[in-house]
Amino acid sequence: MKYDVKDLGLARQGKEKIEWADRTMPVLRSIREDFAKRKPLRGVRLAACLHVTTETANLMRTLKAGGAQVVLCASNPLSTQDDTAAALVKEYGIPVFAVHGASNKLYYQHIRAALDLAPHLTMDDGADLVSTLHNERRDLLDDVIGGTEETTTGVIRLRAMAADGALAYPVIAVNDAMTKHFFDNRYGTGQSTFDGILRATNVLIAGMTVVVIGYGWCGRGVAMRAQGLGAKVIVCEIDPVRALEAAMDGFRVMPAIKAAAEGDLFVTVTGNKHVLREEHFRKMKNGAIVCNSGHFNVEIDIPALAKLAKSRKRIREVIDIYRFPDGKEIFLLAEGRLVNLSAAEGHPASVMDMSFANQALASEYLVKRKGKVPLGVHTVPEQIDRKIAALKLRTMGIRIDRLTPEQKEYLSSWQEGT
Ligand code: ADE
Image (cartoon, rainbow, N blue to C red; front, side, top):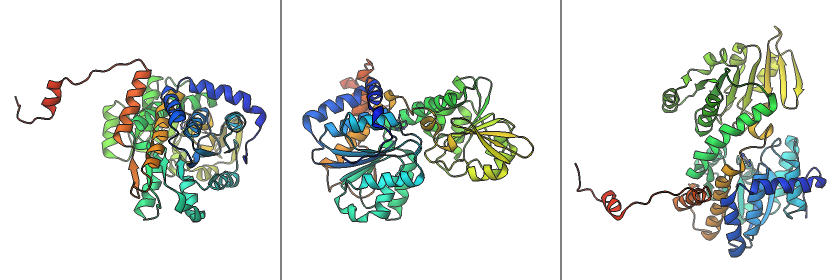
């Protein structure tokens, strides 16, 4: 078996952590048990490009239990947990190409190594696997049945590919499932972003002015948790409806250039490029902390920050001080990469439980409907989404009401009014 991980000696420790995460992933576990009996992915080659975390490890185990031949590479050079990668190889027999801190060159070498499997299914978090496959390995396209995509940024990229006529096979946007973005993006990002910021800095959030840039599902979560920790929260948003929602959720809303002068801590969660740039850095206060929780490291214009600064110094593992000629200091966390996965361990397992249940069931769906799903980007079928919600509720010991026959009839009738 070919693989590239940092140190197989870390495998034992990685296995303990994977099992720890599995304890709070009951929905995925029940799918794994079912997959092990039915083998719905028998004979399927699946290449996955995901954050190499303990939660992802449990997804890989599930796909393998379903009969798939799987390979995993990283979807971000800083999120790889080397012990998890080692355990997947040594304890679970799953090939992994991922090393924490990989260079850009090695990162893409790993993606190419995963593509050497000649996959029937691709599973992406950010669409780097799909784009490398379409750009460099078109010879493999004929074998591909379909793909799945985990995150907002990846879905945006794939929709752009589809609009361009460039996407060669159907992809399911797992991100768009209700049981994904309502929970993972909001509560997952909300909590794990502060986990990353606090592990990196150990600052007190209470009393700080926190500027959240972007009020999508992730931004909503980050703003909510910042408020819960006692921060004064400012939201910056370009969409008028979302900006209105932020205002009515009780946050101050203003353009980023105005917020730049007020913020103590900035979190970007837009999925867009250079949302913090030279004009903002110039306005920031001495001691401002800047970080990103969006998928790619493009949200903060780091070259512009470096150009403005006189010097850069790493002071803790994931803090870089940029010192300006006038003595002002700006602190950048995790090189502008996802702070929740670079400075912490990503979302908690209990929320990834639902995201990855969607991944597993969407894979089965694509295999079952081989050749029948039209080209393009599709949502997860609603029955899968509702099944996952129902399973999750059951594992949480929560029961809910059902419609009475009279209520069902009422909802399907139109004659009855006041
Ligand atoms: N994305 C966000 N958190 C994650 C996690 N814990 N594992 C995999 N992907 C993630």
